[in-house]
Image 1 (cartoon, rainbow, N blue to C red):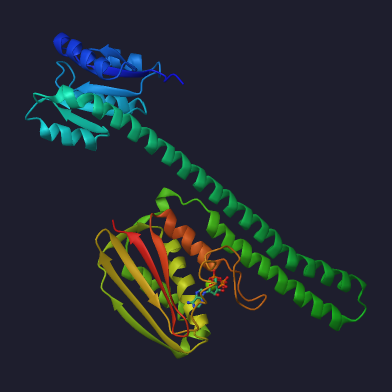
Image 2: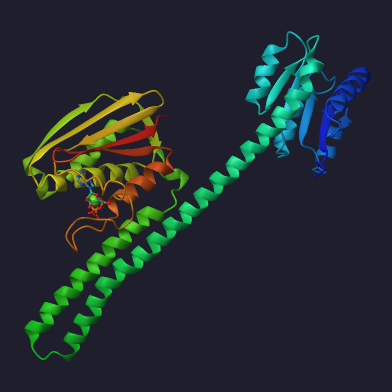
Amino acid sequence: MEKRPLNIMLVEDDPDDIILTKRVIKRHNSNFNIDTATNVEECLNKLSKGVYSVVLLDYNLPKRNGLKILKDIRKEGYDIPVIMVTGQGDEMVAVESIKQGAQDYIIKSTNYLKILPGTISKVIEGYKLKKEKEKLEQRLIQSEKLAGIGTLASGIAHEINNPLQGICGSAEIIRDAEDIDITIKYAKDILKLSKRIATIIDKLSLYSRVVQKEEISLVKVNDMIEESLKLMKLSPYFTDIKLVKDCKASSMININPIEITQVFMNIIKNAVEAMNGTGRLTISTRDKERLTEVEIDDTGIGIKEDQINRIFEPFYTTKEPGKGTGLGLSVVHRIVERYGGMVEVKNKIGRGATFIVKLPMW
Ligand SMILES: Nc1ncnc2c1ncn2[C@@H]1O[C@H](COP(=O)(O)OP(=O)(O)OP(=O)(O)O)[C@@H](O)[C@H]1O
Ligand SMILES: [Mg+2]
């Protein structure tokens, strides 16, 4: 099969260099077509045709140097590999080019023309592979997202349908009832079931809400822990829990304070529930490189090996019917990821569980 020619854009103003480069590249690979541009306007104009596979960009151009042209190429959104060609002694430029989005650089030393064709082939091949990988990753993310939406939708339908059936049934009984006690009993059921639906909807709104810019502020992670504990301590479950704190973090995080307290409260609530009211809750915070880590450790029942992969799924719960919604940890996961952080869990069956929340420091 005949190979399609590859078009190379050479941005160079020195006529001798143009002739030499063309000759060397053509000799190395007759499949390479070389087109030239001597300034930024011509370069951008030709790139708009969308037929080039790589740009060979000379740094030493009179009006606009190669770095500025590179910026223009990226600003205009051209997704094309660029090789910066710099003079000897311009090594810093070479490094800067890579930072600015060039794929490679080549220094005009005595034998640079010898290595140029090889560099071009390597860059084109590497770029193609990178793009294919990105496409695959994108498809994977997309299908995971779709799967996630599917799970969520079927979960919502199921979780809301159950209490709804109960409400309908109770209402029918009340409609036909002649006894006031029966009416009161089933009215109470309706109230309980409606509250359950309200709880699910409340948690779901946390799951899917879009945070407004003005809701985000700089807060100390330790203050957020204190705030969460203050609210959690109001729970009757908390009375026999021994609380150990080792909060060494001093960093600030840029976050919605309500959401981050929700994150800590959901994890602490699970920990307290897993200890069934008695045990030790250890909360530690620390700064680690660019991340602030919060560790919440309990001495509860722990998480079984076959459950650990499922606990962040929406509606996954091991609690008695009607007790947990199974939305706590999926909300945690969702919020933390939205701020560029992550949640990890360490399994310690029989000795409890440890959750670690990592958030980028400000
Ligand atoms: N600290 C923990 N120890 C043991 N199991 C845990 C712990 N935290 C979470 N789990 C497990 O993960 C499951 C999912 O937790 P999640 O918070 O999402 O929902 P839930 O607690 O069941 O319901 P809700 O949060 O609405 O009360 C729990 O049912 C439990 O099985
Ligand atoms: Mg929970």
